[in-house]
Length: 248
Image: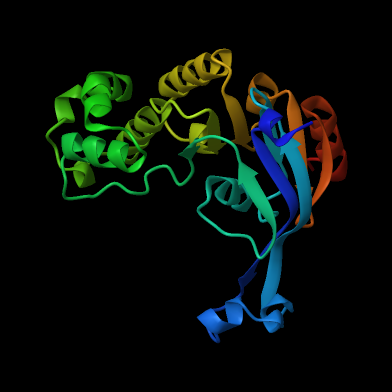
């Protein structure tokens, strides 16, 4: 399979973090061979992870807390850079990661929609064309000129999901955002994701909800001990995960 047939390529991926803030690396250290050695206060969040994703696939990322699921999505989104290996993404990404990031509390909802949409790459004409749809999907028409900081947490999530789900990027990254919000809005989000998948979008989906994983995903990546333990159909991945960590 050639690179042109792929949406995402991950090769020998590794990323590590410090357990504390003392002794930060300098810029010089980042380019030295010594920086490749693991120091006592460092740990690998991911190590030796390799896989490819073809356009239109729906991938569920499974694993216990702290195994690198959200870190993997941030690496695919380009928010983080790897310490080892590489990530190649063919096409733009619509990230539903730390979903309310980038919004400014003192700006109004209207101003935040224009700001965040622009940061995600929408032109002014696109923002104008999509503005009413974003506001109506989020169900906050009465608060369009209200400072963002005065919205409830649920309203903030609805607005952020509405903005990102309007992006036309071919790859959608979703990290636990559907766990927030009331039941009616979650169902609305589910329908929107179904629409995006029907359009042929590629989905990378992190969730602890087995029901949601089975609904949206056909393939699974099981992260355990910070490595890729299994890459298989989602049903097989969930069976393996449940066998490794049975409830009770």
